Image (tube, rainbow, N blue to C red; front, side, top):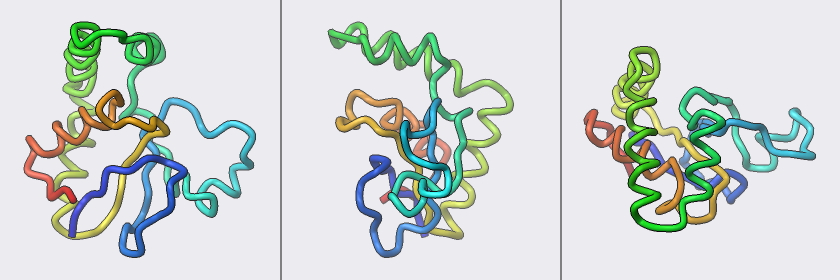
Length: 128
């Protein structure tokens, strides 16, 4: 049992389980009824994405210092009481089921899902 960290829209692994979209916005131009069949996500969990202003800051990060500033702010957002509880839940569920979380970004190193990977690891999640 474990969590996979994925790029939404990429082909699913056979044993990936439920795919959770941790994005601020649903995919554009895709009917809601096709999100899962087109390998985006089965369940949408936008509270695990950066707030709108912070998301713009992360996308605009041109240097390592800019990215580090984004990461620090995003970690602060994710340590909010309610969001932190969701991360705790996902970490616990990773020991009992296969599922995945993801975002659209091509490069995980410059994507909030890399920070989610770290936060889940810190909570003892089993991650592929």
